[in-house]
Image (cartoon, rainbow over all chains, first blue to last red; front, side, top):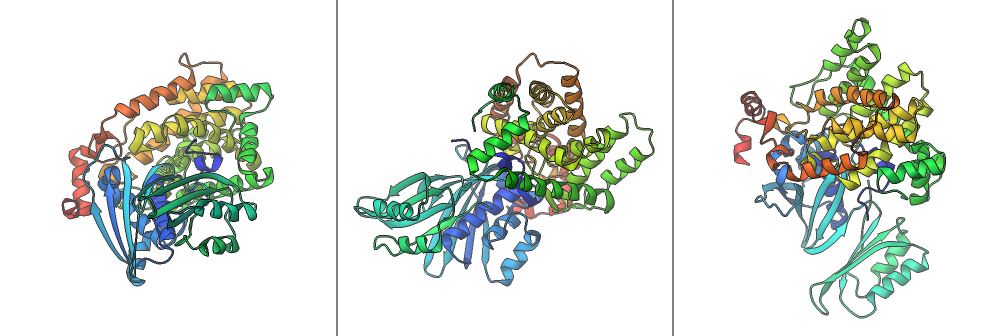
Length: 223
Length: 296
């Protein structure tokens, strides 16, 4: 599938400068991580790789990632002040530089979030023009462009869960555009990632959360 | 999308006797299920944001994030009004407006990435200049943005539009090719001429490296946007005159991709080489960040 789908992946995003890959893309990666966490994280550990690590200050990558973690969109005028706002809302932020790794895309970030007892992790890269790819969620390898609303469903690997989830989506007449399932091992922790044409209603999401084997549902939305 | 490269795009446009922008709008409607009105309205909103950033840079005394840049757009615009420019008034105004948008971007202002923020000046520069020289209305200029989007779509999916991925040729180069194609269609040229203009313009930026001083999207990015706007107009003029690129535009894109792949990492948006590694650039870096960078 093409990473860039249509006109507004090329003309756009409408954004606060100065860099679509290092600012807008970074904000989207931060916001995606925040979606998986489901709330304002208490602590964020951000590891930068490649060009992100080398130019993050000049490109405002640090500011943009934190803005995303605060749930700001790419055009939010508060982006330049995000580090200060994070301090005010009590979100602790730590930046680290990753070791150079030629196998990674030059604009890659790993974000670890903690919220109470819970921890979340997202690794993704910014591929140009504000477009992003999410490569890992909680150490499960995935491939999400976040161009469409994407359901992320941690669950227990057991018979019938996938069918139950897709049955609910089908009941609400929601079309699936892409789907991935991964697990740590038989009967253990698993992750379902479902690309949708449209954002599912709150009702549909609640039905999925109510399934016994499902831990949680989060939605990564394009912004 | 029913096309994956520029050759298929021209074939579609010619078979259906439609301009490229029309094909792009129809494909968008097919892909997203949105109405044509909604798609055009969304592009019009982006156009309005673009033009607001053009105007802001011409009127306000913009100072960038670092204090390094700003004010050149105003300088060039006022110079163009004196009517004695070597390029002619309209082309010089394109330069001023391209600089303007890029200066707003460097000041963390609101812009539209076309296709990237680092190259966000070229398309608005060319469009605003055409609105003057060809007397085009907003509705027509918005259609031209779909022509630009079609070319950008092919470049982005077959090569790269990221400086970290493929150097500045992938950013300023892509934007220049997009704007050249839009200019041809807005001037009444054929889809084939529009694509030739994109190929011709792109050839001239092959190999351009991404070497941002102090890692900022300022030097040399802003000036390169100014030049990109003139290059796009020149490419459009050549194509309208009937010049054809001997190397087909799709192969130029392929060459761009291959050059990006072998470009050293120092020259792909890491601020390690090129202009970023000159004595003056290192001094600027030191002035802005002090010793902070060494700690990182």
